[in-house]
Length: 342
Image (cartoon, rainbow, N blue to C red):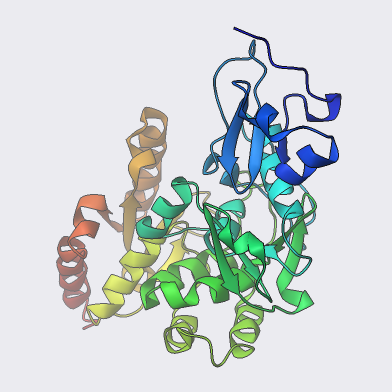
């Protein structure tokens, strides 16, 4: 089998666009050789024949990473084809007009913000979303979802040289696609104070004031009614969307609003997800990572700290969540009723 002609060093092992190939005088026939993979969006990857048979996964490009509040680069490279992941978005950016930015689900994933499963599936399938102020031929690129928008400069940031929706703008991007409770979950993560030692960030993406200001700038956007309702329900202290769902389920039950991140006693290093300090009732949501042996040992110490200080500790999990938390609703209602709070 004939060995393909070598590529220019600038393209060797790289992701590049059809336009870049033309600039280097590479004929279309060369792009069909066995060491070149078409990966959509008018882009190609050179895979040296001795380097294996893998190709870039567009969904993997969107591995969450840390950016500071001003979207300056504090980049922790994900494992795998880090260079190609960045190169794919960079090459795609070169095909777009100057007003375009990565947005919606793409921006959410880049910033590590939660998406409901139906939107996660689109991202994992390799879809990349952009927003731009005008029509261009790039809208016909396969695998690219384009949105019409003209965000202000205060709503666009830059990450690794790529234009991207700022965190608060992501809520506006996704507002038409999210239900009220999903908007609350996203908002909770936007204003959440990062836990020391568990995140590279030290400050929240947004404050409730800045998030409110962003929503007010878009009074005619689809989903604005749900977003306004969500603003009244967003709280700092939920570590995950399931914890937000649990808090909202308790409110829907007509129970008093629980406090978040409760300590069993002043100065304690332990905290509970939510509860009512005045009656010493705490609820812990046990996600999948709580099945790890090390985490279970830590959870046991935490629960012991609460019980030692005469707290009642309740647990719930994803099984109860799938049904709308009926079990924990009943147990919390019983405990609150016994304490005379209902």
